[in-house]
Every structure is written in C-alpha cells, then in structure tokens.
Image (cartoon, rainbow, N blue to C red):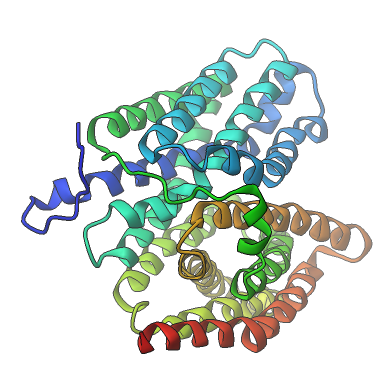
Length: 404
C-alpha cells in the first residue's frame, strides 16, 4: 500500500501515475453509471410495469439529488483524509449497484440510485483536485486531462457496452457489471493510492466568504446558464439528427461516439498547451459551444458531413469547458477546493436538468428544429458574460501570481 505522494521523478513511470490512473478508472465507472439508465429505461419500465415517463424519474431524481446534496455532503466530509473518503464513496457506489442488480421493486431501484447519487455528489467534488494532488510534479494539466479522458471513454465504451449487456442479459446484469468494475477500482484505491491529508476543511461560517470570491461567483453564474443552453440541444440530439439531418440509427450512434471520442483529443491538447495559453482555451470553450448550437440547424440541413464535423467541434468545445473551469476553480480556491467544486458540480447538474426542460418546451411549443437556436441564444448570452466578466477576473489573478 502506498504511503507517500507519487511525485518522485526517479520512480518508474507507471508507479508515478498509478494513483491518477486509479482515479481515471473511478471516473469511467461513475460516468458510465450516471447515464446508463437512459439506454435501459424501456426494459426497466417493462419489468416494473411503469411507463417510460415514470421510469425517467430515475434520471431526474438522480440529477436533483446530486444538485441538492453536493455542498452539504462535502461540508460533512471535508475534514476526512482523502484516501479514506474516496474508499468510502466508492464503497457506497459498489453497494448501491449490487442493490440495483437485486432490486425487486421500482422503489428499491430508486433507493439504490439515490445511494449512487450521494456517492456521485461527493466524488465529483474531490476527484479533480485530488488527481492534481497525487500527480507527479508539474503535471497538473495532464492529470486533469486524464480525468476528463475517463469521462470520454465512458461515453465511447462504457455506455454502448452497458446497453448491449443489458439488452442481451437483462438490465440487472448491467448494474452488476458496473458494480464489479467499481469493486476493482476500490481495490486499486486500497492498494495503490497514497494517504493524502485533506486541505478542504472549511468552517460553516466561512463558506459564504469562500463562495463569494468574484472568480467563483463568475463561474457559478456562467455554468448553469451555458449548460442550460448546451443540454437544451444535447438532450434532444438523437431525434434532431434523425428528423432534421435524416440520419439512421447507426450514423447517430457513430456521431454520439465521436462526440465523446473527441474529448480524448481535447484532453491531450489541454495537457500540452493550457498552461501557456489559458485564456485562449477559456474563450474557445464558451464561444465554441454557442457557435456550435447556433449553427446546428444550418449544418443539419447542409448535409451529413457538415453536421458530423460540427458535432465533433461541439464535443471539443464542451471538453475544453469542463477542463478549463475545473482548473479555474482550483486556481480561485486553493484552500477549500472540494467545497467550491461541490457547488460547481451541483449547479452543473442544475444546468443539465434545466436544459432538458428548455429543450422539451421548445419541442412542444415550437419544433425540434428550433432547439439549436434556443440553446445557442442562451449559450451566447453566457459567452458574452464570460468574455466581459470572467476572463478579466482570471487575467488579474494570473497577473498577481506572476508578480509574486
């Protein structure tokens, strides 16, 4: 069992990176689990004699619980030694998936998903800053890139395999398989992860002061708005591509896989170039998302090649956003990072839920062809706010760091 940081450049390459690789495996199973019910809703509903709308509450309740519980749970856990905290969180995740696979009723399945959501709320608050903490020296951007790459691999590999396994052997086997892989991640945490003392303890009366920092306030305003615009489109991308672009199911699947796969390229670009050009990445992320959404209808009607290229560009922009603003939070709140990140995780999930709501309203009262415009206008407003308010704040922070 490791007892010290893996930052010694003389250690073998694999040993230096094992803690970050372990966290990347955890990210893979957490991201796979978060979205896997979407691909299995019909089968789950059939087993419990529920409509798709009723079964969809598994997804909605999950997002709401993550949004509501991220900050309270992180405050409770902020003083816990990081390795022990991660093992507790992943242990709850494993147990919840075993319960999911054995669920004999819809209520039992919902209870198990609540357990997963609570583990998610803490996990995403700590995983990025912890990856930076245990990475080899001067490899912060690479560590963050690996965390986001784990998310991308989940979309490319985990979700399709989970769906196929569920269709062949039943949805319970999908949850059991996730439980088995996460148990392997738990073993890796026990065997390879160093002891890391928490630097996230924040007294309750100090939380308002921490969260009122102008840099954090800017991110907390920006994120739910731009993610509302983003998920207004993404939540309905499958029917949009089918009806507007005329794609068949196979092509839609390839586009969605490509959207996730480009995240690996984005992670590599971030790890290589972000430290020298942080504001180029920040501007690209917000402007790229807005432009992608606004051009989606035009690209879809121009032909499949155009909409595929735009979706890849869109995926790269979203990857950049996730990387840039997690890094920005760590810069803005070097102490109490996990608490600050917990709020970010919560409001990000608010954006996911509100985006799906906005997209549904547009489809109901206008047409599905308009979701890109609606999401794009919202994202464009967020991009203007970022360029006007958020970028200057972080320029000042960087200037002060360079001066010191």
